[in-house]
Image 1 (cartoon, rainbow, N blue to C red):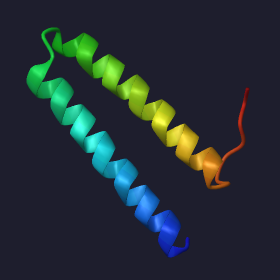
Image 2: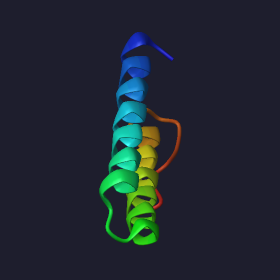
Image 3: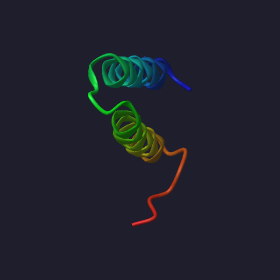
Image 4: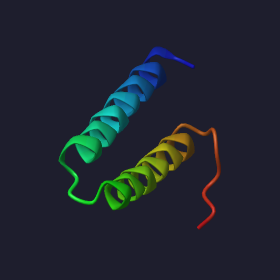
Length: 59
């Protein structure tokens, strides 16, 4: 993994942490908020893996 990919991965992880913390703190329906945040996180991780050649698109 080169430095650009590492920096991109770190930014992705920071964004995921921020989104999950926001869902936990400010979600009115905690379970639904977590589900949405996890679904969004899954999509973000999949997109990153495809973008950097670690996975293939299934679409």
